[in-house]
Image (tube, rainbow, N blue to C red; front, side, top):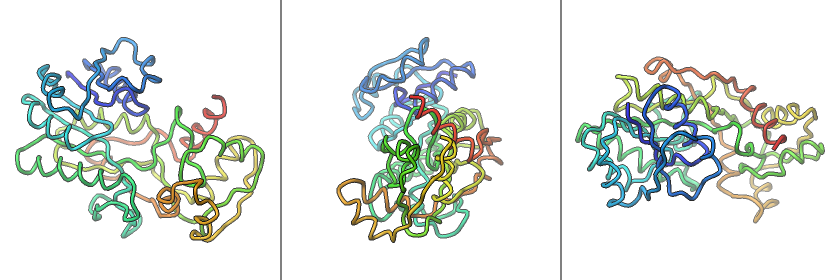
Length: 305
């Protein structure tokens, strides 16, 4: 297959490109050329510089007649251009987020739950918009769309999620020094990761599946864990013990005002717990990484860097 990976210069995008390439596909990476840190890992894969939000640029790019387009960071302008100019396209896939289900109406949550975006704010409203657009075009025009919704993406190359709901680089240093770590409420909010390589593998699986078009899939490790256990696991991966301090969420927001994202911390204190049964059944996808292995690998890699 001839595959175009939009956003292929990013942390997730370059892994998607590499997995399609390893599967024997003819791959082209498209990016703005701004993020270059990961492109050295894609030697041998053709790369083009393009603004995927430009209608003219996408029209020119899509003259190449790609079979599959995978987009790691979708925008409405891009989806509309792909639907307009990808005349021979067999499959369009984009990365969304399970965050748009929050707050979850039931546990574990699945694809039948309402998807309206985290009400406090953040980028989930854009996820709602692009997901609805892709599915509407599928229903109205037969646009061959698949939406992949990962949980918290973890893996080598980015710092792990921290106790404030961000990715501050001194989080692991605090754990290694066995400093007290604040957590919202009682630390029992659920967190469920997916390893970045497992997510990239889902793109390849879905692109080859005759059952994926017009479908939405939640992608995650098989089990969730509490945010308290998540912090303990990161500390243990470094050979240390976590010292936790539990603070009511509103008080923690006041304590860290100006030091963290309010949306990020509120989201961190919200349950994230899902089933991946649909992806297993329709795509034959299953995560290679357990929850524990995914978290441990990320922490140890970040320390080595």
